[in-house]
Image (cartoon, rainbow, N blue to C red; front, side, top):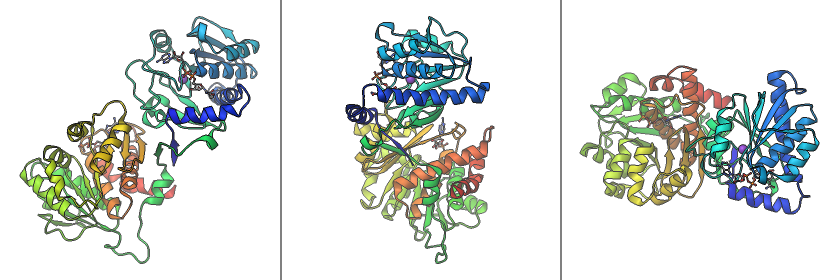
Length: 476
Ligand SMILES: NC(=O)C1=CN([C@@H]2O[C@H](COP(=O)(O)OP(=O)(O)OC[C@H]3O[C@@H](n4cnc5c(N)ncnc54)[C@H](O)[C@@H]3O)[C@@H](O)[C@H]2O)[C@@H](O)CC1
Ligand SMILES: Nc1ncnc2c1ncn2[C@@H]1O[C@H](COP(=O)(O)OP(=O)(O)O)[C@@H](O)[C@H]1O
Ligand SMILES: [K+]
């Protein structure tokens, strides 16, 4: 599990650590870590460090101080280091003195570096890069190592609304910040250097699951299990217009569990034809007992959909509501009345569905996606999985996790239906609903990656890759 702290939490922890650390020691530790990573990259990509050229982009704060100290440490490895000062009158004085003393050169332009260190702005970043910094960054063609975070990206939301650094590697200090999981595209590979902050850090604000966590949580049958004890998943999805959504959701549930899957709806023949191991009926009432329902994909937004949603809620089991199910709840809030307050609900909106269901409650989807998902989860007493390149999963009790995509191949029609089926199967297995949504999102990303392997993968191929994705997390 990766732990993530807000910049506010990190600053408070740094202040406590600073108070009992000699002046400048923390910055030198941080900078030494940056220099070590940079030296490693130079050796890896150019075969050595001596005589290699590194340019520092130095802003007027502690982030620039880190870069200058890192430059001084790199000088000891005979790297030719040049610093471009973006706020010359506010440059970190000790850092600049150490840099000059080590033989670093201050210049007005980039030169032709083998590598660039972004020390423009760190924890205090506000808004996109300012013009001078943006112009300079725009001319960089060498690999970039960002100090703490890529400049121009919001540290707490990962949002970018203008020019920003796109780093190959980001070196951060003791604590991952939200940007490192919310915007992996701009951070590149994230390396965490220990500067001794851990004892001062509170509980993390966010987490990100890793393969081991997911493998551990995924229920597999034991010697005493039969098809019922592992949890039966019910899928109420699809319509005469959208039978495909039913096939995809049911299929994902079938592949995610060795227990049983029941289907209820219009597409019973199609679903049965595609998944012979599944039990299909026309209605939720006829479906028999399940331990969790999936409802919504391809359901339609008319009276039939409302009736299906009501029947599912009346069953009083954990339920994942997706797609048309969310639209129905947004349009007809009284549908919530059928919900058993003790039965967990997982909602899986994309941005437009989120807006539909959240805005009537005064919750808007701004740049802070974690905050928005948390607010809706609390308001509706439901787990909210907000889809996107970084998927956010928030629980009503405030827990939040982020699942970063490793590519964007999952942005394809029907991919969300696959995710819903995975969530349903994990809910039926009895997993905590927040964790179920997080684990499903993880395997979904992995399946998308395995299916695509560099070329577009339609949802039916993502589906096919589910067994390999589960194998991969269980092996881990
Ligand atoms: N506090 C500490 O003891 C430590 C701080 N460290 C470093 O210090 C950083 C924080 O330093 P500071 O709080 O001094 O501030 P920063 O260095 O993050 O930023 C301050 C400067 O950036 C400018 N700036 C803000 N937004 C900008 C934008 N969008 N475009 C261009 N310039 C912008 C500000 O005007 C200001 O001059 C951390 O990110 C980390 O790199 C590390 O050395 C670890 C220890
Ligand atoms: N740019 C992106 N990068 C990575 N994953 C994405 C991106 N856009 C969407 N996704 C993922 O793809 C899935 C799309 O789901 P959804 O919008 O419900 O599609 P559909 O309704 O066609 O099934 C979600 O899991 C979402 O997180
Ligand atoms: K930076």
